[in-house]
Amino acid sequence: MGIVAELPRAVRNVWSVSFGRGLESYQPAPSTTVYDGAHRHLKRYDRATSATGNPVLLVPPLAVTTACFDLRPGQSLVRFLLEQGRQPYVIDYGEFGYADRDLGLEDWTDDILPEAIARVSEEHDGRGVDIIGWSLGGVLALLTAASHADLPIASITCLAAPIDQARTAFLIPLRLVSKVTGGREMALATKIMGGIPQEFVRLGFRIQAIDRELAKPMYLARNAFDTEALAKMEATDRFMASMPGYPGRSYWQIYRSLVLRNELASGSIRLRSDLVIELSKVTCRVLLAGSRSDVVVPAASVRRGLDVLPNAEVEFVEVSGGHLGLVSAADTTWPAIEEFLSR
Image (cartoon, rainbow, N blue to C red; front, side, top):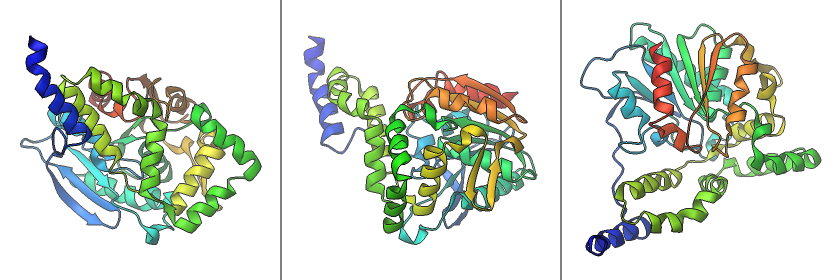
């Protein structure tokens, strides 16, 4: 009798997430702009009381929105940090177009991120900044710290940072093909298009999570009565549908140096013929967090950082969730972050 009574709600749930306007609209945590420039919109999340500890700068990877840290209430690292009494900030890169085709990773490591770190520190009377980076965002934070020893960086937390790409199974075919082609097909494609368009990025993320996509109909049927579970699924779908593209030069650097040559696994990366960044120059505290169920960046890929950061105080923690899910893993990732920052 209870199931029959709840059936209309279940039908509305499934219709809303499949064909309707959704179960809930996106309501990001309130924030205030600190400064806004080209691909460098720094936002401070609003809090009603004074913060404790170091300020926290959230660093997303390229080709995603800052919603990765704030999917929805209950799936928001931002709101968790606020609840812990911390003051989080986030750097938003915005959209990329053909005019941005020459932006390279060094634009982030030498300009965008150093400026954000310095400004956050200035807002807190010169305190050190705790950085939390997801995926490539964690790598960018490490490369920035290695390039600029004078920056006020107190610690870096890397969530699913791709250190050793040889550990990522779905990249093996690309690496095998590149032994024949040298990656010339990707170099040509990014040059012609000026980057990777947002439609390709969104499709690529769904292909990487193909098991989730194939299981979605069964998940909908199994959780038709569970509004909260469907709202979480909807938040992930909304995030994946909003991904911007990659600037051409940055994507080629990622593809060549991180994927094909797997340079970070040996402790350095060459961004230009005259620019090599060595991870041995990172000296701050570092927390590496990875998940075995993450098929995009497996835990073993992240754990490699223990070997290539010899002069940093490094620790590794295994958390739960997929590549995006581990960012909002309230039972494993969030407590690990808070324990690390509290020390």
